[in-house]
Length: 239
Image (cartoon, rainbow, N blue to C red; front, side, top):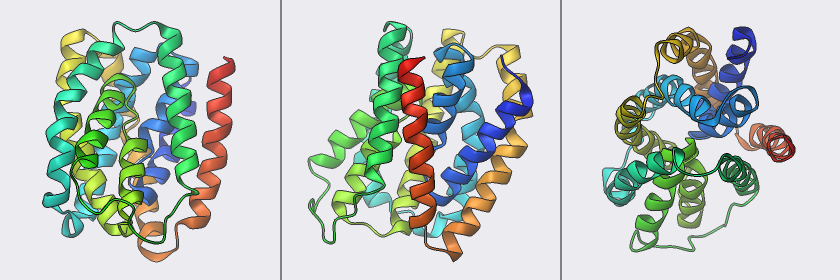
């Protein structure tokens, strides 16, 4: 399953990204883990460990959560998550790896785009579309962030509202996804023990990232994260 210290380093960096931006934990961990282990195993461990990072983000952004904006994303995202889990076990490995690379590259590209005013002014219909696409990729490869990021950037939300909505949506999706992974046999004793051993570095990274989010501009950090993610996507494509 790979060296535990290496896995801990991966989730530490993923926690930093997630704590700072509100997304990216799955983008980074699944991309790295899938080089070291089967995609289904990588997705299961990423989801289990990522739940702790999500909970930390929910707590830190609890005052910024807008349920009015989150509901359209949840209404389509939760059913689509179940479909994504089905695809995880029925799509060819090459298709899953291609999906991982595409999501990483899309997530990286989005960090450079920030429209000065809203392109989309209401949740209908694009909020429901973004929720569905995010659920599909979230359920299959734990990479539901980029569609939501694209949608929130098009709405020109401030960073606090973005992170609050991301946190509650990812938490709800995890509550659907993890039981389905368990039923599919992806969560084994070994997977669970590995995930438990990675919680501390994931939380440590998330809390440091949250401090960065509160006190500093996230622009510079996002550029660094983008460089890492682009390099990672290329690595996944050629592996």
